[in-house]
Image 1 (cartoon, rainbow, N blue to C red):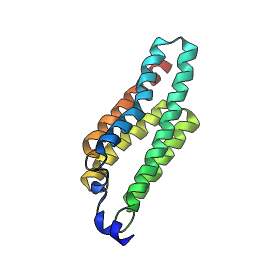
Image 2: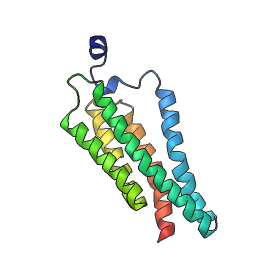
Image 3: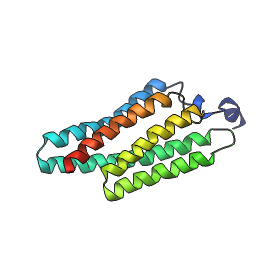
Image 4: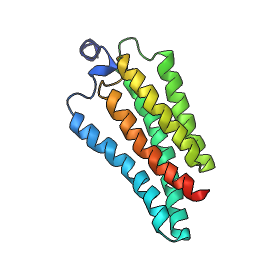
Length: 155
């Protein structure tokens, strides 16, 4: 275990070896939300509503997943988790749960927006992989666009 701690000094060192796979999976995870956002405008009302609910549930699950990813990053760092990392993890988990409980695209959008900002900041502070500075905002923008389309259709 000491060897791992010596090799990984910051979160920025994580994700370098498999970055292409990470980018592909991260992008694929957002696709259902954006596709659903478009479909709710095309499908008859009943089908669109069902898909919208599934997309919002997927969003809540993703936010909760990202909370776990955030927590997992801190396990590999020397000195363990910082208060800011734990706070971010709790916020993301809470946003995910609230999105699920209230089936709210708006709460999901707020969660994704905060993730775009917080992971960008974490990458600059070397608490997350450096490519998060550019990837997370773009990734979260896709999810937010899909949820915005769903929200606009509901109004």
